[in-house]
Length: 175
Length: 155
Image (cartoon, rainbow over all chains, first blue to last red):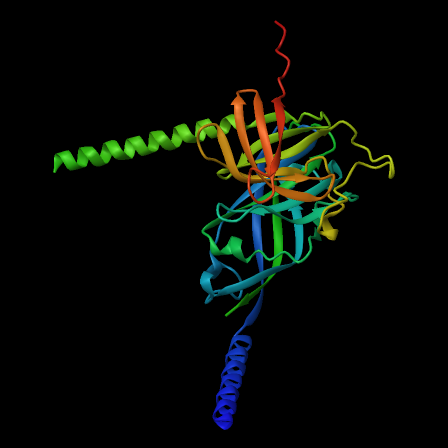
């Protein structure tokens, strides 16, 4: 009787271990890069103004993710975010005191993913500080997402439009 | 056959009309609002199909301890504690649910770093009842916000 119970227990342990190994072994990590084009129309008054990028999710267009489907995605972590102001703006980052980047979609609540405060540079390109280990996988499982770049203008600006590229290096973990 | 097409067309028109009307009703929330404590002014705008409110004015913008503009020093995420309070979105992810009510959103209290579930009820065009709560709506607190009226232009 005891022998039979032991055998059953051992069998369960082996099956459990096999399932665990199968689950661990099948995960793949792929680095990739997403570029968002954010823009807003002026005039812009001193204080925070929002540039919005509407992004249609298409994994096949991203490096290394051609054969990955949305339901295979397990986790997407951000490894770096940099913002490049468009040349046509005739502006650099010295026009802003701080900046924040947030992500939102119709199905997933808004999350702050990166900030820069204070901004102390006169360049057109800026690397942001990342928030703590945000997983953005759920945004990429839907059809569309919005990226919101808030720029805190030091002074009023009467330019017609401002545009920027938000370049995000990501690591996608999938089955 | 013609009758079926007519009914389908009328249904589509009715749906479109209802959607446009709902959007217009929901958009009444946009504008600049002042909570009862008078410490901040919050601008509510629409991103996608949801409503968000960010701080656009602070009565005391400078932190007396640091001499610098106030930041979100109580944020639970340590990496975000340097986020400026001016521009911070304290109202997030509200959708218009009809009957002058916006729901499914959250309100953030920068004084303690806590986020609460929240509903917004417009009691008249210039007054909002903002109810923050934990769990069920009965266990919460309501604050009255007033719309900031811009001075009319002199002729």
